[in-house]
Length: 182
Image 1 (cartoon, rainbow, N blue to C red):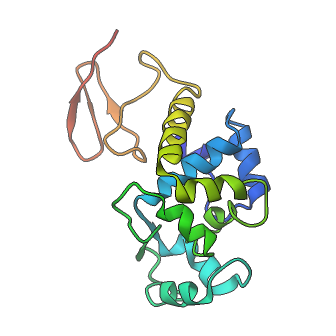
Image 2: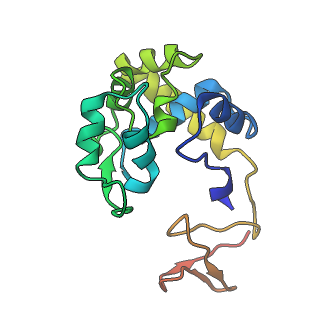
């Protein structure tokens, strides 16, 4: 299942590098693909420990702002943007890391005095380089253990297994999708 290989939000840099290496991806892939966090939101339970318990490598004002929407207990599904422009594919995610405002521990680990700092700095000021590297890394990631024929599924919701039949594929909410077998 895809979820087994997605690194959890609390990993440090060596663990992230190892996780990606186990999939045949390098440090450039790690940083570029993490830049996908320029889009979207995270649930409170994924960053609570960071905003309440970390004191190094986190901007205190940023932590206080996030605490307003993420209480010490409860509110696990409350959302916070992964960067200040969560609907734009831009470099703000990387700029935030330079200011110690990475929402997830694993995000900020990319800019914490380690070997990925230089890439974060480059991507923070160069959208063209980031976009090119992101696209190349997405292709590389897409070629990891691809399933062919009837070995895999095309899902409406990546986190939900789908029931299959010869005629169609239905997700657990009943949406029918045509299936081509070849």
